[in-house]
Image (cartoon, rainbow, N blue to C red; front, side, top):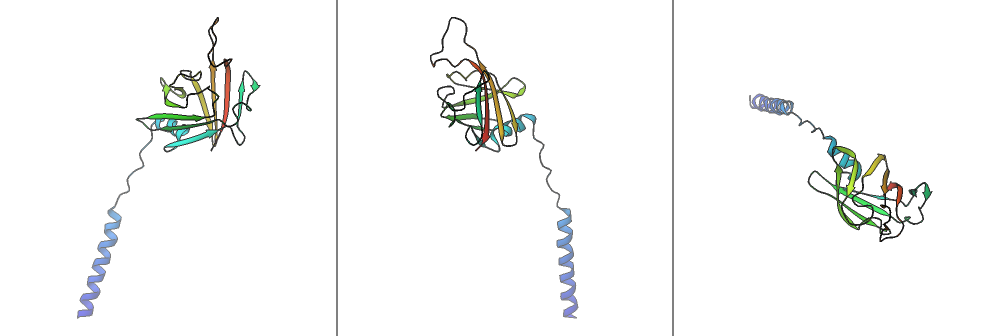
Length: 162
């Protein structure tokens, strides 16, 4: 009789544990907004570093300038509340660090805060896997020169994920 009660108790406990597993509902994965996806293109889950090294290139007005920026790196960090960047070896084209933002509702155009020539410009970007391309123009009004030398032109930075 004790064996029967013990077996029945185990059978009931097993049945309860199986039924309690069936009642658990998985939380649905939250859908990301277009802005969240655009931030992840540049900064990944928290930050990504992009570099000219290992196959990247830089052109200005169609002329190769990779040798000037061969060690250039830009690191984008971002989330819904904060978007920052840092650079290395930019030859005074970019600030060492600052904030970045999307331009209006265009999630494929960013603007960097700072005082260097690339700051305050609309920079369009495209990402394909481990490649990031930045396109921007630096225009000098007639009769003016930039303090950093002759940097005016149409730039294309083809960067690789570090």
